[in-house]
Length: 234
Length: 248
Ligand SMILES: Nc1ncnc2c1ncn2[C@@H]1O[C@H](COP(=O)(O)OP(=O)(O)OP(=O)(O)O)[C@@H](O)[C@H]1O
Ligand SMILES: [Mg+2]
Image 1 (cartoon, each protein chain N blue to C red):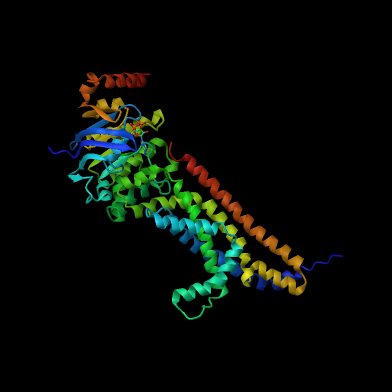
Image 2: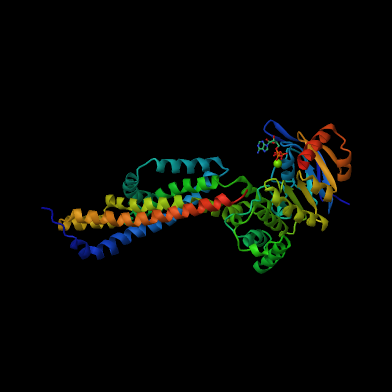
């Protein structure tokens, strides 16, 4: 006889949301924002006219993109203290803390994906736009920041949001460095109270609602983009 | 009078393809010059060389006293003084019409926002689109977009305006609204170089017609003379084809 007790959700809601979900959102937001900014920088470096720079950026992006995130998190957690030691020249490995380590790892990981998204956005901008902005006298940096990048980001908004949804889901991998996100929190409560099924059902529902709502938003946005693009030009 | 645009023996290659062959021509202030010729003859390439959008390998181009080939030349600064209008309009789709007209004024010419907007509104009125200041390019017809593009070029107070087939991407019923604006500009004394196959426009306002074929300037003649008595066989063949097409 199965006996479910969904009361466990109510009793642990504070912990689940104020600690678990708060951390999930914290990591999604900051790793998303920082990764996006770094991704733009990487995209610029990948189109540098200076070959070694181009090569380094490409190697970084391709390496990160060919590794599973969970491995990267794991290795960074162990490597970051040594890298920090080397950078600051301290005699011992520097304890960085799992939160910082996770934030840095996710940021660096997301940056590689955002780089490729931004790059394909930039490549999709017609040559005529570049000529038109040059003809108006914009300098290369202005041209990039005022004309090319805004259009690239706008055209790629659905893909960028999709990447953020993936990031939101991927944050649960922080369990490998003993951090507790929403899913981790649900798991812990479930273990403690012997209510794993209830907790995992509930977590699934929460992830589903959030991601489904976000994906509807993405679809709306991409429909709008398609319409406005279809009407540009002749 | 000294030429505003002066090119001498300009040659350009794309790899092995010799696209411009020793082109020599000049445009004085206030002149309207039409460039025509068959597809692939190098018209777009030539006009893009005039503001340094394309590099040349031989010859010299001097615009308003500035040598485009000199390494000391500040190309962006020079380009800001030469207007350019494209076949596919190339308005910035992420900006509304007003911002399309003010962005380069404020960021390149460093005009105050209020001044830039005033200039923009004056020009929008002139092309009959002041009501569209807050619309986005995607909400405008092709003809309207091209008129905005002309206003955008004029907002920089250019010494000359280059046009590359400004009406050839338009539906027939929209061509005249753009040509009307161009005719008015020509009559006001704007220096214009226009690649176009609108021979009506050329007859009406062009001072000179340059005919290109195979990367060469085959003819460079006052417009009356060009239409009445083309000197070369190639120009005659081209004209008969294009006039037959226009008439039909
Ligand atoms: N970026 C480029 N790379 C290589 N070849 C090019 C490039 N741009 C143009 N060409 C070639 O140079 C020649 C001249 O091209 P251009 O666009 O100047 O001709 P056009 O007279 O403007 O023709 P159209 O009437 O079709 O616009 C063509 O043979 C074209 O294929
Ligand atoms: Mg052309």
